[in-house]
Length: 162
Image (cartoon, rainbow, N blue to C red; front, side, top):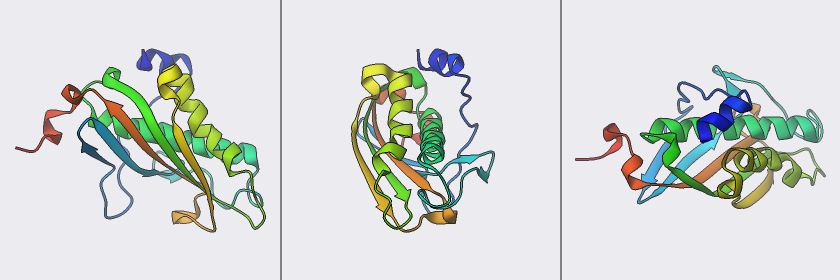
């Protein structure tokens, strides 16, 4: 179902979304996967830069948040044996690099939230935080963090500790 929806929307998940620092892209605890903050990167290049409200419009920020969410789903797909085992998105935290006085962070983070709803329908609806910050790594306008639930049998064997 998820793969079909992605194909219908013309979205291809990244082959790999490497960590950009000293951390792992995702950590698993029980039947939850905690995805590290994702930036709007495509093929190793940050596609959006600057602060929303001065360098980028709300619409551009929305697209940046959507791309960061797609990267988060890519991380999930590389952690699970089968993406169909993804049960639901539990929570999304969105950080928005904001110009002084900018107060529409919620509209920017809608790019991530609406992506998950488009892909998972009701199971994509989630709790959320949208926070304005003065700066993000690499001058990114957004960073999206995800907590998702999955079937425990869906872990790749390489991710299971002996």
